[in-house]
Length: 179
Length: 179
DNA sequence: ATAGTATATGCATACTGTTGCATATAGGTC
DNA sequence: GACCTATATGCAACAGTATGCATATACTAT
Image 1: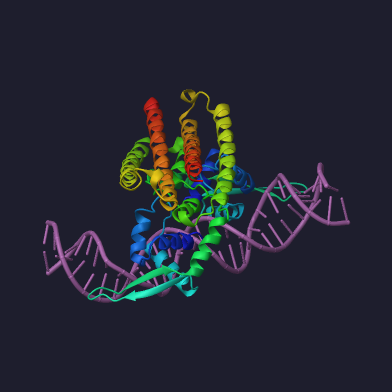
Image 2: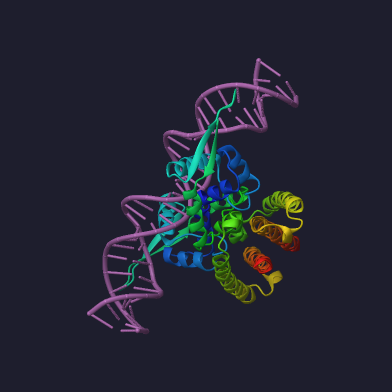
């Protein structure tokens, strides 16, 4: 249900095409909301049908036409209303933790390998986030509310990954004890 | 796809009924995997049909019969195989962060109220987790592998909530600056 | 030449998860 | 007497997400 509002929020920042939104969801919104391009195109169609978005076809030579979407007044109102309603916390569903619950059946070398891949991924993502922070949010106090809030969303991502990395260290210590 | 393996892992610990599994998922497995009782009953039926579980009806006077499920050799093998395969990270989908992305449209009092509810919920969950840790994992080095792994899953929950609480503090500081 | 990546859009199907409802009994609360 | 909680199970419908496939062009790398 939140995908539509994630799209409205992203388009409220600046009008965009489905393709551009897909990129944003993969990069700048990676720690906020996840969606495939198929999902995004489908939802944009619905939002347009419902009058929450306007669509302008931008012809291109030698490439498919781009469809530029923009939030309408009705769309913004819809988003505003949603923003005031408290949202449920996303339920936890982590396959890695499921594995730990079957602890005595675990293949420890396979687990270590998985942890190593995980650590590399998280470290890279942390670097990406910290680079974004330095580039856009180095002086948060001076920014308008809009960007201060987006900075807080980024902080969530950074703190979450740091906690994950600390957890990985704890795991490694525990596994080294047994061996 | 992981629900079936969460069930196999839980039943591998000890045989149980759908009702008991629902309780476990709500409490001890809350930070691992989330599922409703309807989902659990449905999946248990499938696993039984596929021969991964045995089922014994336990008649009760004046209450519906209980159906006790146990993992078969085939079920355990299936679980083992799954455990060695690397699992994808769960995608992030957090409505609260979506809200922050529409930062300039936010109603700050409503946001503060939502944060306060969140803080209370997290603090309570942290206390629960820490109580479990003290009761069952006060001397982790002495425990067999099975429980050391389950302790690590719990540590994940604890570190995650602590990071969430630190983030909330950052948010409160930021909101206090403006206003 | 062939493969891969990027731009740009989307349909159809399968799987997973949520919500509403249903049944049956016992005990406690307003 | 009416309502809530707990035990114990489940069906049916719907919403949301994932996966596989399709189309079309241009550029780069091997």
